[in-house]
Image (cartoon, rainbow, N blue to C red; front, side, top):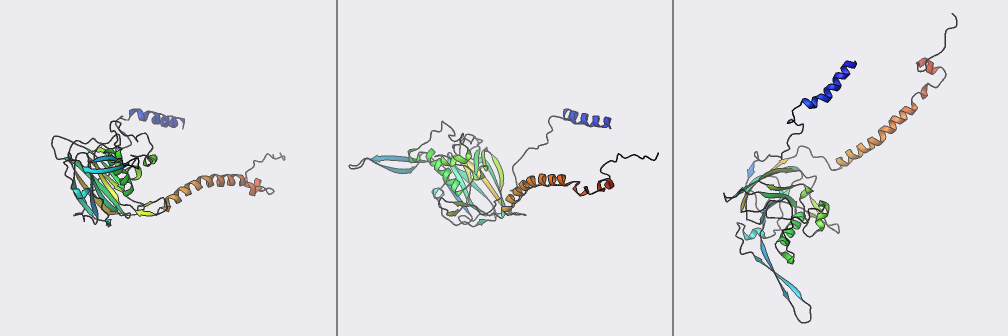
Length: 328
């Protein structure tokens, strides 16, 4: 028995020394890629999918001083004459379409100019699993560009576009891009309180400085936003292709016009558990951690009490007898 125990101990301690160092129990994690088998159809523009864009503008502010008042500020927005991107004017408008739930697979190509942003807006179905694949290519063979890909709700996209406008001179608050990422040291949950603070959906769906990416989204329920006074608004989702130098430190640097090939695959979910199951499992585990020691202690304290009647312990053999036979 002792020899066998020694062999086991030696094996446990020596086995890691003989295993090659290039073998690891954790394999490389890769993003989901499930867009090749989609049943793609032409997207229903402005009914299921919307196309938006942000392009550089020039914000000119003139201060007018009149008698009887100290001053008033009058702003005027003009399209940057130096910007010659592929976006059309209607892409920069904010539509108010009532989008249907996305239940079809579709593919599309977006041309995004230098220092511009391309966006696809969809209404995700919480009963389906949506996979989004994006591939970045160039229209100029002299460059090999990358871009940033974000998934945002409407509320998050509004904050993002405000930061974009500020970076390009809106409201006279042009940000100095030499000091990259002014919110890098601010925790994500507090970034929404800063002027240029913004974040992606669930603080995780941001893929920066990439040439190709695919990811999947499954919602717990219809996404809604609650206002300060309790009002709720339905939230659409925005697939954002960022070809600008935004306020994040590790984002891609724009070089040229890019072509973003976007594929979206929507498939039914096999099992949809209600939200309260998470609370039930967590509470059950906590109650089990508290109850099990109490039950074990109670059983330990009660053990043997049923044998306290006369001669019962001797009959059960739980107490050794010291009596000796005196007949001999």
